[in-house]
Every structure is written in C-alpha cells, then in structure tokens.
Amino acid sequence: MPRTVILGVIGSDAHVVGITILEQALSAAGFEVVNLGVQTSQADFVGAAKSHDAEAVLVSSLYGHARQDCEGFHDRLAEAGVDVPTYVGGNLAVGQDDFESTREQFREMGFDRVFDAETDPEEAIAALRRDLKITTTEGEQVRVDG
Ligand code: B12
Image (cartoon, protein in one colour):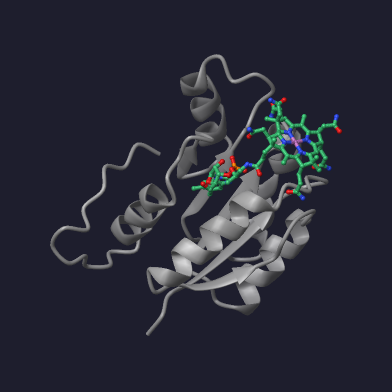
C-alpha cells in the first residue's frame, strides 16, 4: 500500500522547481504524492491532508516568508483532527546565517522536521521512512539531520 503524503509551497510563494524534484523523488521511492503546487493556502494543506487521509504533510517555502505563512498552521491541523508528521523545508528565513536558530523556531511552531535548502530529497525520504516506520532495504540508509 503506497503511503500518501501532501506536498506544496505555502503562502504566495511561486518557486516550483524544488517541489517538482521532491515529488519525483518521493514518487520514485514509492510514496503516493498529492502535490498541491505553488501558492497553497494553509486551508488547502489541511483540507488535502484530511480528504486524502495523508500520513505526512511536507511544506516548502523559498521566498523568505515561511514564518508568517506557517503561523497557526498546526492549530488548524489540530482543529481538523489531522495529527501526522509535518516537515518544512527550503529557504525558510531571509538570509539564513544561522540555520540552527531557524530550525529551532520552526520546531517551536510545531514542525517535526525542518530542512534547509541544501537538503537532498533522499534525506526527506529517509526521515519519512523513519517517522512512518517504513522498513528500508539494506543500502538505503541516509543520514537524517532535519
Ligand atoms: C528560480 C528562482 C526564482 C524564479 C522562480 C520560478 C519558478 N516558478 O519556480 C522567480 C524568478 C519567479 C523567482 C521569484 C522570486 N524570488 Co526566487 N529564486 C530562484 C532561485 C534562483 C532558484 C530556485 C530554484 O528553483 N532552485 C532549485 C531547486 C531544486 O532548489 P530549491 O528550490 O532550493 O528546493 C530544494 C531544497 O530547498 C529542498 N526543499 C525545498 N522545499 C522543501 C520542503 C521540504 C519538506 C524538504 C524536505 C525539502 C525542501 O529540496 C528541494 C529539492 O532539492 C533562488 C536562488 C537559489 N539559488 O536557490 C531564488 C530565491 C529562492 N528567490 C528569492 C526571492 C527573494 C524571490 C522573490 C521574492 C524576488 C522578488 N523580489 O520578486 C520572488 C518571489 C516570487 C514568489 N511569489 O514566489 C530568494 C529568497 C531569499 C530568502 N529566502 O532569503 C532566493 C534565495 C534568491 C536570493 N539569494 O535572494 N525566483
């Protein structure tokens, strides 16, 4: 049974290349990907997670406004009864001199894993396999920093 994950770029952000690559990598790894595309509202993420009975929600943001766009996101997921791992990744802050403090901020906002723009899609896949307890075959182990 393929495991369904929701993927999209939040807010007014129109950077599409990253999620296109992520979608391909996740699909190739056997996940069923619901790609909501760019400029996706919080409500659309929440609605899709609920209607597809998704097992994880992956939020992308590149243009530097992720914090504002993700404000209250986990409250909305909780209100809708969606309790699944949430990941956020990309260029999450303007600048990103200190990614560790950015990661801490997004963790405090409720994200289970926070990835920077250098993230290889395989890292996200390894994290999903770990969080969703999907057994990997030998040789597929990838270090997970998120
Ligand atoms: C191409 C591009 C554009 C194109 C986008 C075309 C399109 N439709 O996609 C255009 C010209 C439209 C554009 C516009 C803007 N851009 Co632009 N853009 C870029 C650029 C050059 C490349 C982005 C890209 O495609 N990268 C290639 C993909 C493969 O990499 P990626 O997007 O980083 O995604 C990977 C990882 O980040 C990670 N990842 C991403 N999301 C997630 C999510 C999860 C869960 C995980 C695990 C991983 C993950 O995995 C992806 C795959 O490997 C970057 C600079 C750069 N070199 O990154 C700036 C950049 C992202 N843009 C930037 C800015 C500021 C803008 C604008 C605001 C500029 C403006 N003032 O108008 C606008 C925003 C418009 C909008 N509404 O979104 C800034 C963001 C600054 C910041 N965050 O601090 C950057 C970093 C340029 C810079 N150095 O200043 N942009």
